Image 1 (spheres, rainbow, N blue to C red):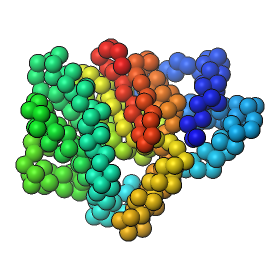
Image 2: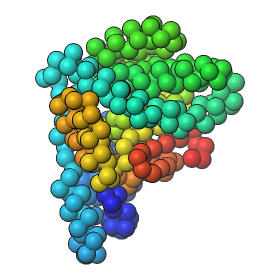
Image 3: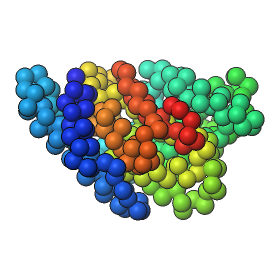
Image 4: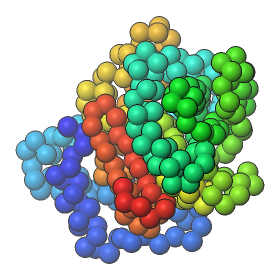
Length: 306
């Protein structure tokens, strides 16, 4: 219901006719600014189109606007102590495990990983941004070991406590992965070499970033990645707007339940992700697969079809 594709496609067509695309940018600051502006303009244009269409189209648009928020989650609040934020990402990890999301994400990534191994005749090198508690990193590593596939996996986050916890758990689980402190908006400061990774992955975190911030991560990933960027997040829908906080509340942690509500209200629609990817790459070599309960953005950097 909150995907609003009929009005969205018409709004996007109007913007293309008005010469909004292609969007040119020269640096990361300009990329962030222009992406935020274009996505905002798209939402405004979609509102106008929904008014013209009337009826259920306009009611759906009004509902989307009532739900939408830019509020910051508790786990992202820099004023909250790291120990408390760590508790939040650990709660999210438990929730994802309970809902069996990690094996589903591995299934999404496995074809790409096998493709790299077969083409490159070597291990597949994966960087996960915003790893949090590291649940997906551990699931990927365990799965690759079971399948006897060669791999190198690096988890990352900007919160030191998350990195320390991730490396401690990696040692306990005896999994060959590592976590490093990393600012996903400035990969260049990490002194990565060109094409150091094959896949850059971010899961359950796209909505934590503004359109412009997400565009920066995509654009910078292209400099250090041979094959693809994959972003996995919740599907923007009315059902998940109520379902996510309900499931989060089962752990009995008030701030975590509130974070669930905020997050579900911030999930991107298919067309928003499509716009962000096009601006960040200057191309259309990407797909957005949206099927409840998740959205998957896949961007190929190697020119291969998606």
